[in-house]
Amino acid sequence: NDIVAVYNATKAARKRIIETGEPALLELMTYRMGHHTTSDDSSLYRIPGELEHWSQPGTAPVPRLRLLLESQGVWDEAKETDAKKNAREEILTALTTAEKKKFPPLDKLFADTYAGEADEQPWHLREQHAYIDHHIRTHPSDYNLEKFIGGDVLATSGGDAHASPEPPVSAPEGAAAAAAAAVVSAGSSAGAVEDTNMCNAINSAMSVALASNEKTLLFGEDVGFGGVFRCSEGLRDKFGPERVANAPVAEQAIAAFAVGMAQADWDVIAEMQFADYIFPAFDQIVNEIAKYRYRTGGAYHCGRITIRAPCAAVGHGSMYHSQSPEAFFAHSPGLKVVVPRGPLQAKGLLLASIRDPNPVLFLEPKILYRTSIAPVPTGDFELPLGCADIMRPGD
Image 1 (cartoon, one colour):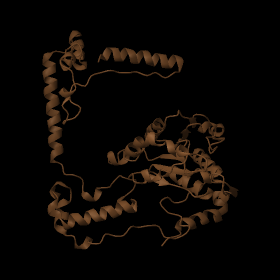
Image 2: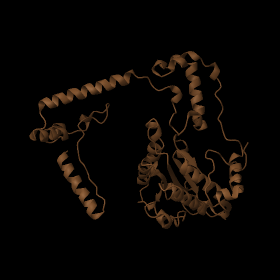
Image 3: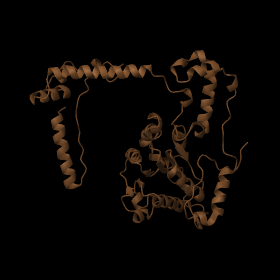
Image 4: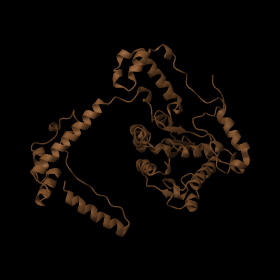
């Protein structure tokens, strides 16, 4: 509530951080004068006289600052009146301008959910948009279309031409397998081919990513020591503790730190030690990471985030080390979910995930880490995302 006290405490904390190298926590206490929301009635839970107490000039933050500025001779009643008048005019002008603007065109309904143009969006979004477009054209009177850019065209175009939305567009059957086979047969272009397991293939993928881009960062619980399953073994020695860093046992903090680093133009590989413990970070992943591009209209994004998480049962993990949470995240627009089936797929898909302009949740079935060996190129290669590897067609 006291801006001078906040300044002094911040200055002291900064001095202590510089001198000791230790972090500092500032707890800034204040009071909410208004209701929590427009539908809230704070009088139902405030004690009598509470609001009056916090409204005193020497108690509430803004009146307290006003008294300080007046005592220094830099503020007075005339300046106060003028500032309020100018602020009101500025707000009303902005509001009036905004109210006159039309809403974005309806064909941009899902724009910026993922990187790329409309025809590059996942098939399920394109399918949904086709149905919505058809419904609006068929029933234009149900919508206030003049409020949308281009809405007048929709209102008069009719729905016959869009009565049957295009079916989902999927990759040709066998495309994933063909891509994998092509990588192995390429030989020298992706490096020598060696037989390896999935754990080592993942390690190799992260090593390639760290070596090929100096602004790639790997962090998570114990990753500097190799991780629980030793997927990151040797990487800290190779690339240094600044780029392969241990994180505290705080999944929400790991996800939040990934957002900040991605905003600072880093390619982030964040490891959740077990997928079972990803749920404390659920809000960060589905409400921040997945939606960042969409909520800013494409102005900002944190698409260069890959969250790795060992998942599924291994035979002796009991309830909290055996879960498969992919279904929770597969329904989150803006997020890609990848699950490799073997060493070759693990390396190629992980490198593609790290370099994809969208955030990716990379789930690693831990029972597969060392149960199979397959030929994998030692160099740099990628396998296409969003392309299922069909091992046995269903009915």
